[in-house]
Length: 256
Image (tube, rainbow, N blue to C red):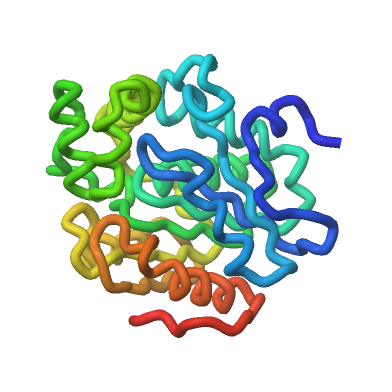
């Protein structure tokens, strides 16, 4: 039976007893679990797809936002306690990569290290110096979101939807800006990095520094596209994840 914490924080997109590995997904700033709704269809049947339900959005709209990125990681690690007996793999994109990494560190400290950490479109914690600050006026935040994700323009053009969506984006931007990063203890599990070849936020050179975060293997894949390369390149990304996690479903070979 799921604990109240797990039920509150984790959405099971596709999961049952046949799923020998649980892929736990962490969305970008302002992101929802819907970012991963199509992943179940693109991954092998024995790979479960779960998504972290950040507070202040979706059906957690009335829940208070996290105070810090570290406290967010604490809460997610607590929520994953009941899943510790399974083979867990963490995947995070952009802000979600930082949260996933912090959760991986907490799981390791508790004696339940993840089988792998997959990080996408985000520099490692010791390479955040000089990263631009995200927060600004509401209009500046909207312009920033749309610059990297033009599909969101329609959402922000609707006053009702803007009122619902913008607070989560604003608060996630605050979490990212206030996250100090810095050196962290090295993990033992493999770390797999992904980025778009035209992503100004996380270049291949910057992503390669995730190799310093583990005693285990590191491998980087660069796919065509910008910061949200994983939308148009979803099939290639999921095929690569399947192969790396040992689930080998047929799919498109990822570019390297």
